[in-house]
Every structure is written in structure tokens, then in C-alpha cells.
Image (cartoon, rainbow, N blue to C red; front, top):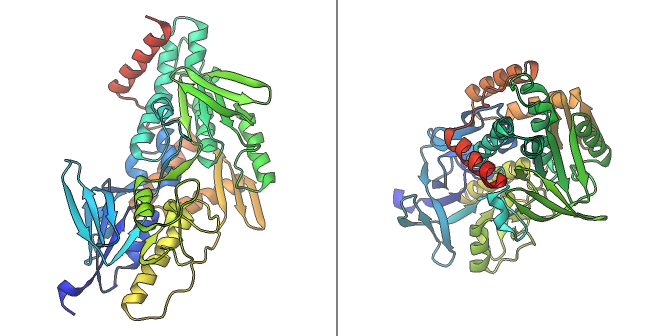
Length: 439
């Protein structure tokens, strides 16, 4: 087989699914092209700790080129895939300077993840950023810590409280973990650092239309998580559907009517939807999608009628599998091995079978819940399991070591080593303060 005749595999996305698919193809007789819109892979389960000032971006992100540097058959391309042509078997890649190129494939793996869903109200994004990227995490970190600075500058109690109110929309793992972290910042990290305000007066409101926090967990664990949140000072409001959101607060509808939560800092973690690429692929192939825009795939994770196209992670829908890291990791391994087996003339792969390793969520310092099938744990034991699992899956010894050090400092002490905000962020928040006060 000549070099020109080698099988061409294009992988879109360097999240868990894409990266694990690429690694599974390390020794395959194929040329692999890995395409991603940023030059880094993000360990998403810990990105909220960047927003909370515990970890730095470099501790939850790693260069994609570093990950694949020893894979001689793999090339990394920095760019965004904006179109796919299944009939000609090529994808269109747009670089940051606006230039485009087409890359041909024999097998395509789409692991482009998902975007934050505002349920038809994309205008909310300006006032309540989601938490999907490093940029999102840094933006949220700036808004959280600068809110205390603005409260310190406030001229009256009502204005202070407005700045000290934080609204988190969505009571899934990200929302619960962020609410818990903001409570710890207010009650443990910042007291004593200000002269005109008491950070412990912060009002952290967790909102969701569902009837319990962490609805994918066992109900008993959800109840324990909610009790813990209330104990550390989080105002949990369930059955509250967001009907309006602007720079000054949130309007929610409950059984008693519509009420307002005046909060200058809002964070959105209420849902995800398929990416534009998933929608384009579905249109081009005629593949069905679910209500969130994710492609309904075959049992072997391929697009119906297109065995050469795999869809992974949050971009696909199969048997109501959750959009969690383990689904993407196992799907990536499965797809990579299936492609390698095809190239070696092996028999067809068995349908993808997801092994549920359980759900974990850290509510606060020394308290997490672990739903491990028949084993359900909470408190310190659950927290230790949470620590161990996340360190295990982090990429690289350096990141593992530095994260452990940061956790030791933050959890045993009171400081946040990443609690800085930029001049640009402070300027933006001060401009909002002036608009809110009418000056």
C-alpha cells in the first residue's frame, strides 16, 4: 500500500471523544487529521474550579499538539469545521483569519461536543454566561470576584446587596458545584478582606424548574446535596422557571406567580444543545435528531446510512445516554478501535455498550455525592472518591501534581490563588454599576 493510498481519518473536536478516538488509532494503518477550534483539550469536569479561582487554565487544559506529538500518523489542524459534504467526503475548515480549506476523509469522526442552550433566548448569554470553555471560566471568575469589589464601592445597602446577590440557573452538577463554590468564597475565602462590606452577607440563589437538584442522581443523594447546599448558605429554589433575564436580574415563574431575583451576577448552567456542525451534518445526511439537536445514531455510533461517519459524545443521542465525560471517553475508544479493526480486515464491531461507572458531584469542601450503582456515598468519603477519580483522568503527571497542590492549599487553607480580575473586567463591571445607579 502506497503512502498516498493510506486510509484518511478526520476527527472533528479534541474533547474527550475526539482525543480518545485519536489515541485509539495510534497504531492504525491510517493518516489521522484531528481538527479543533482551540489548540487545547479541556478537562471539563474541573473547569468550574477555574471559574471559582482554585485552579488555573493550564491545570485543566493541555495542548493538543503535546498529547499527539508521539503519534506519527496524526496531524493537528487548528480551525473550525463549518461544513461537511458527505457525498464528496470532505469537510470545510475555517481558520481564525477567515481563510478556508477542504480536507478529504475516508472515515469521519464528529466529536464536536455541544453548546450552551438558552432554550430559544440566546440574548440571555450576554448577561448569564455558560461554562463550556476556558474563556467562559475566566469571564465568570472575573464577574464573581469583581462583584465583591463593586459592592465595596457601593454607596448604600441596597446597592451593596444587589452586587452581593448571585443567581445560578440550572441545578445540575455544574450549577450545584458553582453555587457551592461561590458560597465558600463568600463565607470562607473573603471575610476579613473588605472594610465596608461583609462578604458573608452574599445571597447565592440556585434556580431550576425541576423538583430536585441533581436530577440524574439517586433521589436520596439529591436530597442530601440539597441539604448541604442550604447548610452552607445557598438559597435553593426549585420549580422556578426562568421567564426573563437582563443585566439587573432574573424573573422566574413559580406556582405562586412571577417573581424577580435582583442579581448583578448570573451564571447559566441549565442545558446544552447540538452544535451547528451537528445540525449541518444531520441536514446533509438526512439523519434524525432529538429535541436538543443531537444526532440519533446507530448502535455502532454511526450516522444512519453512512457507516463511514461516527458521531460521539454530546453531539450524538443513543438510548438516552447522558452527556457526561465517560460516555464520550468510551465512545471515542470504541470508534477508534472499530475503525482500526475495519482497516485490518477484522469482523464488524459489536454495538456500543456503555459501562456506567456512576455519577459524582462535589457540593462543597469535604462533601460530595457518589452514585455508583448499588453503592451510594456522600460526605467526606464521597469527596475523597471524587478527588481520586478526577486526578486519575487528568492528562499528564505535571497537571496531576499541581492540581493536588492547589487543592491542598485551597481546601486546608482559605486562599484562592487565582482570585484576580483584570482591569478590563473591573472597567466593564463599573460601567454596569453606573448604568444600574443611573449615573
